[in-house]
Length: 175
Image 1 (tube, rainbow, N blue to C red):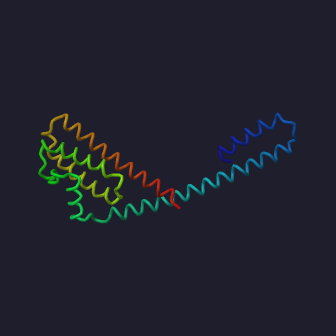
Image 2 (image 1 turned 30 degrees about the horizontal axis):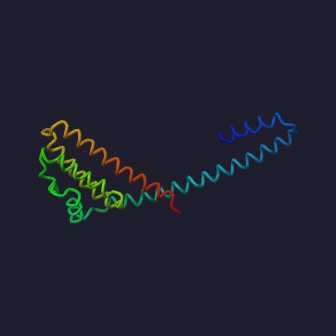
Image 3 (image 1 turned 90 degrees about the vertical axis):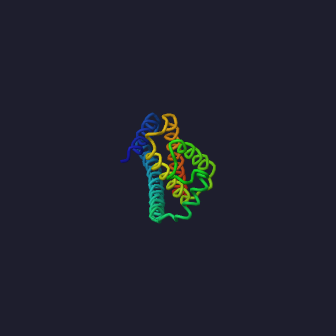
């Protein structure tokens, strides 16, 4: 027997033991309550199976989308929108990398609610380029700027993960 069912049976049995009833009456009550609990457990299991299938479908769609290469022209346009005057990522210096991250995150915060998963793919690609340039110039960056950049990198990851979780939750709930 399942643990919640067993606990419910024990609780029902202890409540009934103090009543003026026959053993047969108590047995019938316990059987009815057991059937109710089993029905609830079956419904919950069905819901979990459906949610699992939907989550797997969401994951499959995400994997297919991730295998599709990004359009270089669209990526460049997205980079120009998010980075403005800092869009030449390869030429960012220790003095300009921190303001580029600030610009990037300001735009991400402002636009993220309207983005599709594909838009997030482009933003992630730009983030990776920024991170690569950051690693290239990191040894010449002031400590406080590096700390600020690390915080912005963490914020981007948190926002992206939050969107993934939200989309997964919506996919699981959809009929």
